[in-house]
Image (tube, rainbow, N blue to C red; front, top):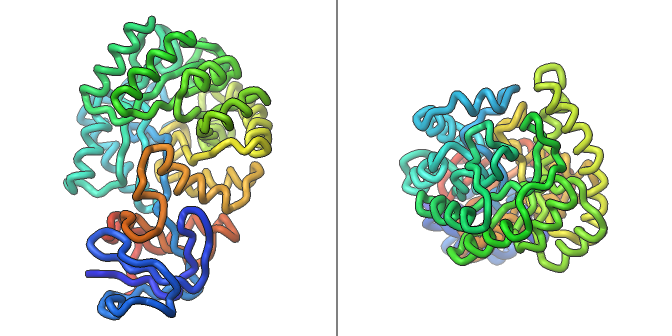
Length: 397
């Protein structure tokens, strides 16, 4: 049945307007405009009162690990995964995203092609869940970050990387992830260690783009970040040690930055449970990441919302919390909401998602307050629609 949101404050992914009406029919937005000018067809729709409430696009989390539950020892959890267990965890975690207003996710590393398969199941309506882009296995150098967990495959040399990209796509990958530096959760390798060579990164990007896949680069250290940006990756995940040169390069190229603050806070705030080596690295990275956030905002670098959900004490559905951190680190609520909607959709190449306009997919979230005025309201969605269907919350009538 059609739904009409009446007299609502609307954040359409870009700007905010008051006293608006939004008509949803057959899974899409049919009409948007001033409530006073609502079309006659709105009278026959089920009304969702919007006075005092705010309607936004569904949130987009561009960095999750669906097969991981946020246990204290990430590596130990990874070693215990089997395809069956990984699929069940991923399906359960998809539902958690919906409950928090997240209607699109990008999985950046898991066991085999499991997340790709779970994403297809959600798309076909076999299980409830957001739209899923999945990278299959991430690509790392021999002995590099993630080699000990099971979500990355070890590859070396440009030709081997091209073949790996092709194999992941053959298995179902709709995104590609390269691990350009060390990381926090791999012992024995520094977080800022530079991994792939520029030639290897260029081969990965060229091959992925040839197949129409966007590329995310895990990159923490400055040298690895700059190499990834110059290679043409579409987004840099973490992006902590950012120089002025990097910021200018990202701005000029339109490279998106995904700061993944939730991942750092999850480890630092539970330093008595997370392995000591990881906590020490997380603290060092957070200091650099705060400075990077300020520099990136000054230079006008594009931002998206990525949580790295599944890492220690970083549960799925954490995108709203990520937005509160992004604001605490210098963003305005409007900038943060754009990062989690229109910007995320642009990064993923989605033209009819992340916005509320006629013809767009009706991925929508209704809040009792206005998160563009006070970002804390994003933590408590009242109603979530996924392609026009109620995915979480209770309709008013």
